[in-house]
Amino acid sequence: MRGLKDKVVVLTGGAGGIGRATAGRLAEEGARVAILDLNGEGAATAAAEIGNGAIGIGLDISDQQAVIAAVARVEAEVGPISGLVNNAGWDKMMPFLKSDAELWRRIVDVNLFGPVNVTHAVLTLMAERGEGRIVSIASDAGRVGSSAEAVYSYCKGGVIAFMKTLAREHARQGINCNSVCPGPTDTQLFRDFDPGGKLAAALERAVPMRRVGKPEDYPGMVAFLLSDDAAFITGQVISVSGGLTMSG
Ligand SMILES: NC(=O)c1ccc[n+]([C@@H]2O[C@H](COP(=O)([O-])OP(=O)(O)OC[C@H]3O[C@@H](n4cnc5c(N)ncnc54)[C@H](O)[C@@H]3O)[C@@H](O)[C@H]2O)c1
Image (cartoon, rainbow, N blue to C red; front, side):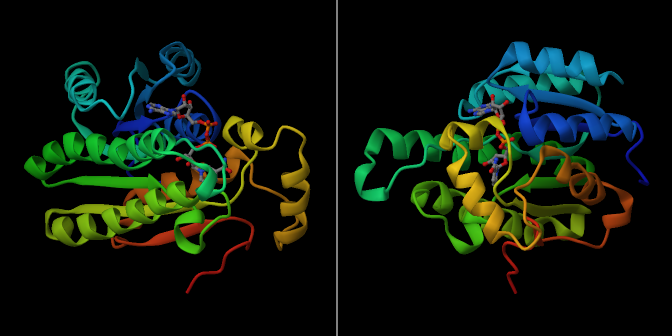
């Protein structure tokens, strides 16, 4: 893909799942990736595996000061950041009326304040330089809802609206902001919801392509949106979910 060679990309949640697969693909395309993850050891291992000058930094994206320090470290050690993938996310499935404020706060901290913290730190630099690409991994839950994921869905809908608004505010500065929405995907996050595999079996029947997603289903779309080929695409929401949702 055009324009990814030597691009410095910050990617959150790259120690596992969709983020790990995406970090690997971006490095293959020549990008230098900084992986920010709660699992610092996993981030360092992933960075060593993908190579091409990647680094791993352990932090919680809901901690704004830690995010600001990490972004400064990436600029100093890797170079000027021109791409951001907001991928880290977390949820615990539970009917809304059974959930409590402690769970809501954690879900909002990670899935809403996390991308806001990282985007604010990175976009500040992109705006000064008049160049940048931001891709947020939202969810089909944010487009069409998802039972037992009310607060998570509210956050992911918020991420989609956040990207659209920043796309409008920064279009003339050459900064593109888009969202990618996975459907149910076989990662640790999903396995924690569904240890017996019953939900996955039901979803396989519901997905037109008759399977749940794999981490490898997403990196191509993310790499494309970060590339020069997507220069005229901004404020868009793209579902990658085997046809499960076909939003207008
Ligand atoms: N798996 C699915 O079914 C599915 C469906 C739709 C959307 N998504 C979204 O895709 C993204 C990736 O999810 P995944 O399925 O690969 O999950 P995963 O649990 O396999 O990986 C998530 C990564 O994010 C990191 N992380 C979690 N909280 C963090 C925090 N506060 N600070 C920094 N890092 C943190 C984890 O350590 C982990 O490495 C998430 O935004 C998730 O909401 C997943």
